[in-house]
Length: 447
Image 1 (cartoon, helix red, strand yellow):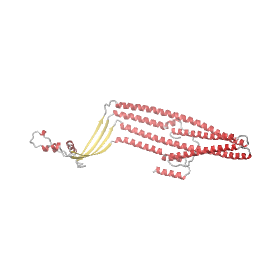
Image 2: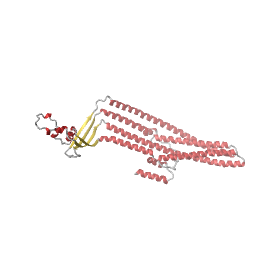
Image 3: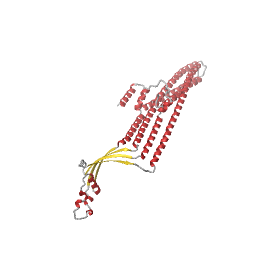
Image 4: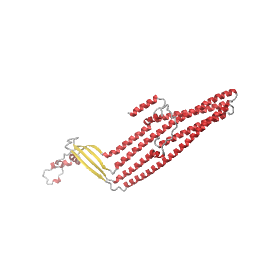
C-alpha cells in the first residue's frame, strides 16, 4: 500500500511541477526502476529457497490413501490381516472333515483361491530427521549465503542505477552550461556580423569577411543543435531509469564534491569484496556438507492407519500404529566421499585466492580513480584559465578588427579557440564527475 501511495504521489509531483530534482528522482528510482524491481524479486525467490531447505528440519507428514482390488491369495490374506478380519477359515480349516489323518496334505481352497477383495487403507505417516551429520544445517547456511549474495546483487544494481542517474543529471548541467557559453558566442557573432555589414557599407570591409562570420555562426549553431539533441537523449535515458516520461529536470548548480572517505572505508564497504567473502562462506559450508557423508543418518518415524473393504469402514476398530527409528551409516563407498570432500576443500582454497584477488583489484581501482580525479581537477583548473584567456583574446581581436588592425580570419581563429576550450572544459568536467561517481560506486555509496 505504501508503494502504491508513493507511486501516485510521485506521478502527481511530476505533473504538478515543471522540473524534477535529483533528490526526487532518486526516491522514484528506488521504487520504479525495472531492474531494481527484478533484483528485488530475485532476493525474495532466494529467501523462499532458503526457507524450503530449512524446512527439512521439521520432517514431513504424509497422508496415504490406498485403494486396491485383487484375488491374489497373498494380497487377499494380507488385506484381511491389515483389516484385522482374518479367521481360521482363511487357513482352510473349514475344508478339513477329519477323515484324512494327515492335515498337512490338505490344500485349503479358501486360502489358495479366495474371492476377490477390495482394500481401502488410510495412513498418516510422519518422518523426522534426528541427525543428518550436519547436512541440513550446512545446506541451510549455503542457502542463507545465496540469499545474501542476491541481496548484494540488488544493492549493486541500485548503486549502478544511482550512478547512472547522478551522472545524467550532472551531464545535463554541463551541457546547459556549454550551451550557455555557446549562446554568448553566438550573441558576439551576431554583433560581429552587424558590425561587418556596417563596415562593408562604409567600404572598410570585404564581402569575404561577412562570409567568414556567417560560416562561423553556422558552425556554432550546429554545435548548439547537437548539444540540444544530446539533452533530449539524456531526458529519454533519465525517463528510462525512472520508468516514466521526464520532460524537465532541475540541474545541480554545484560541481560534484570529492568524497571524504579513505581507502579503508572503500575496502570495508565494497560490494565485490563482500560478494567474494560470501562466496568463501558458501565454499566452507560445502565442505561441511560433504563431510556429512562420514556421519550416520538417524531418523524417526510414526504412522497410524486403518484398513477395511470399505472406505474408513470400522476405522476405530481396525486402526493400527507403528513407531520406530532408523540409523543408516555408510561404511565404504570406494573413496568417493573422501574425494568429494577434497574437491570441496580445493574449491575453498580457490575461492580464498579469488577473495585476495578481489581485494587487490579494488585497491588498484581506487588508486587509479584517485589519480585520474586529481589529474582531471588540474585539467579543469587549467582549462578554466585558458577559456578566460581565450575570451579576453577574442575581445581584443574583435576591437582590433574594428580598428582595421586585424583581419576577420584572425578574429575567427580566436573565436574557434574559444569554442575549443569550451568543449575541452566540458569533456574534462564530464570525465571528472564520472570518475568521482565511479569511486562512490566502489565504496557502496558516498559519505
